[in-house]
Image (cartoon, rainbow, N blue to C red):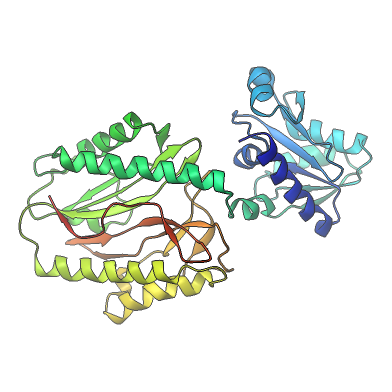
Length: 363
């Protein structure tokens, strides 16, 4: 997303530089370079300057692509990007440079320091990630489309009898992936999870050769990537006509906890408080030890990004923050349930982007 949207994002980062007493920032994390310029190549770095003289550096493979994707930013075609941009900052008269300390390696920092020994360096912290947590409406439209692709792919898979006894987890996962790609996804958001029977009690099981059996829980956690934006959804199904009492018990519990978590999403809500809204329900039912992860996370250009919803998560939610709500109960050796949606925090209540029913589906 180049042009005015990217320029506005760089302006918001400029506002952060004043607080750091830094006239320029070196952005080397590729996903952040993409966010601030629209450039999607595999090698790039960006110098953002308080006076607006921003520079994108990349190598010769991306001369044409960088011109097309980031036409409003001056470009340098080089190979060693960080030292070149640090030199550019010094040449512009800047004596202090903010950098992404969570991204730059020790060797990378040493190279910049050796090349420009008089340049003062200060951590940019995760300023760009903080900006990315709040989406504009164009970004939300892309997320909405990514979620719609995932919804439709699961619906088509179920309608075609693709989740059934006799198939392996891996076969179902590949089928679901293919359907998302056929519907317009540029990629899957992450390795699709299809976990059946006792494997459904493993929160992040990798689909394997286990053959699905009648009576199994089948947990499907998957997403589509559309124009760089990731969706995330989990639904847990039952194979066959009969549902065991223990399956119904934990499914209804997780569904209720997930509802409470969704309802707790609000502008200015504490992230830890949203987690507690769902977690307390599971703890009160005696399954606290069977719920072993946080409630959710932000989604966008990455599948996991700020904000974080967990028992010790800092901060508060803001308007236009897309997050997941995904509590689970996992009974080792028997099976587990997770129900997950992607939603957007709004002043008048959360907007649900993943629309597949959360009623227990028996297939």
